[in-house]
Image (cartoon, rainbow, N blue to C red; front, side, top):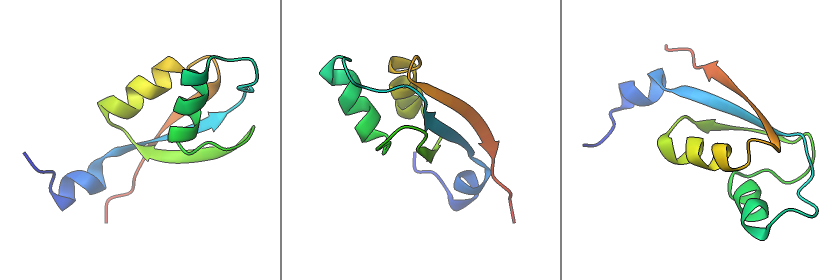
Length: 74
């Protein structure tokens, strides 16, 4: 089932901030950090809340801070 434009507007966003370094971490954790778009310490990105993003965040939960951001519906 395809998402409608209304579903996209009502979707919750996740604000993800890298707060711990990936130095000395397993390479799969480094790749997960990069795949989320995080490039350096204290870098913040916003991603749409989805099971795949939640899974990636769960894998590196010890390296990041996450907060839910409600998007404003027009």
